[in-house]
Length: 548
Image 1 (tube, one colour):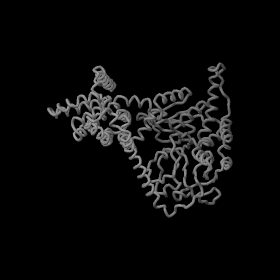
Image 2 (cartoon, one colour):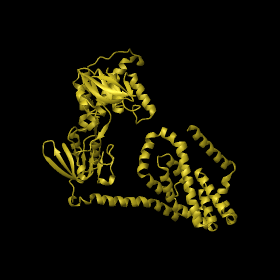
Image 3 (tube, helix red, strand yellow):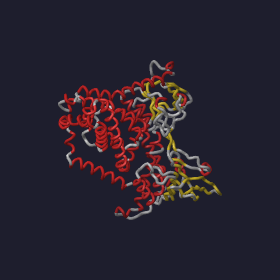
Image 4 (spheres, one colour):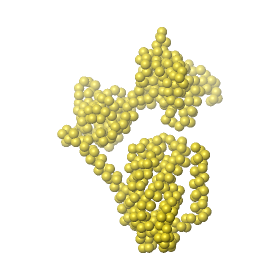
């Protein structure tokens, strides 16, 4: 593979070198074209098929190599072959050449780019998979965007070659016709500026914007269809400007910003204000990490010019500190604070009745209905618990429940198994290992932190192992067993079963969006777009409903 890539690089370099060394660019000037017009026409009259074939090959080669001068070659096509034959030759030659440039970029550059910009390219590819053909078509309609650059950049994406070809063929047709037609009038042109007048450039821009405008119109029509069945219940006036369901990080920020611009906002939260971040995630985990880091530094005091010291501590005190940190931050996310900001805070469960109405089952047993122009569903996510046989028999904790469960323990868990090699599993594995637990981390995949670059995964693994964590990658959990009071996790690795004895089991294999029970099903849509891993067509959900 590497040899073939280097060979392509060499051929490209030789071709461009020959172009420069032989000064072939002098043939791609407007003046040279006008001077040679009569000679080309005479040669075409004598050998029409040969001239057409050579012209076609030269155009394909120039486009494939991204050599400047496509405008001149296109004008030559109109001047020599006339409008229709020139349009036919240029249209197919330019598209074939563009596709070759697209493939060359993909073959030579994409692997290198993906290795360095994996996440950014993944986001781009997601967009290309959904809207790529549409945006490529729009760009092809505007010749002020360098086509050679489009060819090379699209080659770095996961767009299908056939899609790139046919969209380019159609998208470049209008601009190609303008240039070929200008070539038929070559004798009357004084310069290239005569082709692209401000009025013509403006027309191209409008042509490129037209698909975007058409899409907006279609979206409006689709929106009308979505709301049609709710016309009879559409409120004439609204109680609130915004209703936010969920008092976690996303919901609090949404309510805060809306209140800051003097909107009428209602925030609905049934459980704890602050959501996952304050109560189960960011705050408690970082408080635990801080204590674990200090214990680690005490053991390695010599690195700081001090004596190595085995830390002596109460695990109950460590967990109490975690809860104290949560309590210290609670006032910033409290009902009282947001009420003071002008937000109406209702403690209960919110459910959509229709696209503009939310019914709130308040914690005191009463119900309340509110209408709003816009509704934010910011209900967060919950830990995913795998359907592992025997899991309930041995018992387990998640990143949500361990803070209360472990606060009841007198000592740090002696043998802790952590299922999952993501960020949550890794940070908790390291923290408990530094506090004295014998931690075994089980990951089904080939490496931990799989969403990061391979180098990051290796660095994280080395850091965990340095702190005493036994990292088992490529191990699939099969079942849990409880025999004579001993808890065991059975895993499979390379076809062989292995048994891991533990005192506590932490499930940290990922999180799933909380979406059920909020009325989305009653609106004819079980899940909203862009929430968690579930995906549905966007036109199935009213656009003023947003998920966070």
